[in-house]
Each structure stands twice: as C-alpha cells, then as structure tokens.
Amino acid sequence: GHWRGGVGTLRQAAQKDRKHNVRASAAGALGTLGFEAIGSEGVTVLRKAAAEDREESVRSKAVDVLANFGAEAIGVEGVGTLRQVTEKEDGNWGVRRNAVRALGSLGAKAVDSE
Image 1 (tube, helix red, strand yellow):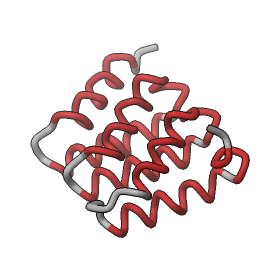
Image 2: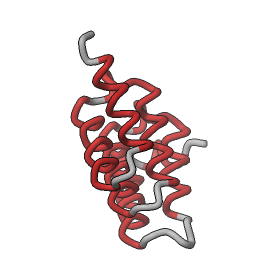
Image 3: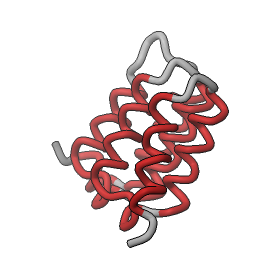
Image 4: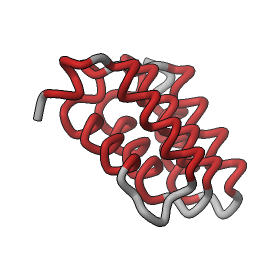
C-alpha cells in the first residue's frame, strides 16, 4: 500500500538516525503501524534495536513494541532477542526489566519454545 515508502523511512530512522530520540520515536511508530504493515523486515529492525542500540530509550521502546506484537508475529527469533536482552550483563536494568515483563506477557508457551 501507500505506507511502503513510509515504513522504509521509519526502518531507516530506527536504525541509523544520529539522535536517539528519533530512533526511539521511529521504533514506536513502527509499533503503531503494526506487524501487518511493517512485516518481518520491520521486526528485524526492532530486534536489532532491542539488542544492540547504545541508548536505553531506543532499546526499551523496541522491547515494548516486540512484546505488543506478540510471540506469533515476532517468532522464535524475536523471543530469543528478548531473552538475550534479559541476560545482558552490561545492559540497563530498566531495559532488562521490560524484557522480562515482555516475556511474561507473551506467555509460557512462547517462552518455553526454542
């Protein structure tokens, strides 16, 4: 649809913008558009942001969006990313807490699957 260009712009901003508040806002906007609009490419961007972005606000927003999409949409890889975030020794405790909550909201079936 007509969102295709906008989704690409948001994916780019979530990954590469120099300003962390722009990356966090872009991640949130991807969440607002929803999984149907952003597809697996968008989920990949969010997974990378959740696990690797240097700023807490970006990682936290990406974790929240992944949780809201649900286990079926984010797949085994997305659940694995949330697990990875919970185990990050150098990570921010607030982001780790959000990832733990996210895993809890996805349910035991999602968390137990590998």
